[in-house]
Length: 131
Length: 169
Image (cartoon, rainbow over all chains, first blue to last red; front, side, top):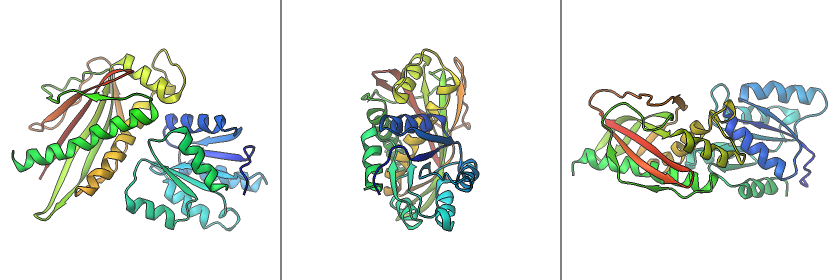
């Protein structure tokens, strides 16, 4: 998969701060078609609707620790849904314990970033996903 | 030094290291810590505080102990605005809704990073959600008998404070 910065992206985080930071970093990388959601529970209907409209999200960037539906639960749901299971999914987390890494890898995450991170790290992780 | 005091110090250090890492990576500022002090009353030194409860289990060869405490980061208004501007890569002149959760996110990342180090030392923390309190001279009360340690921190965005309390049982 080549990195196409015109792809439709959704950024999911319960903290406005992190959504703003990630969206800004993505825009600086050239992405322009970015939507935001404040929880996995808010994102899921947006993802379903986008798929039904024929213009699905092509890349999901999600925080892990969110109050209603965690990033891990969202990832599991995506991977269990035939028509969207191949969607690239980047998990962003503040928790870097080995046990957590194993959980997301087993759930089929495309890549993950541990906070705090610099723009270069985000770019590098995204490039690896679409290499 | 008593075993409890040793555990207290063991427990606090990763949080100081973590906030230094957060500021260095995401706010382009090195942070230096001054000597820790015992907090004498409930009044915060900052105008904006982000708080996260800490609950977990400490496991060692001697057995298991439950522990609980709080991580509190407290910023004077000017430091908060400058820190938020650096983190969001945009200049803010006052506290607005747009920067209202910056402190909570910094607190969240600090906790996540300290949690990893503490896990390696036998402290298993259950991650909670941050909250915030604001206003000049706001008060954050802890249970009677619980000691809170305040460490002043200096950054290029101004001075701020990290408060930690810990008890095990």
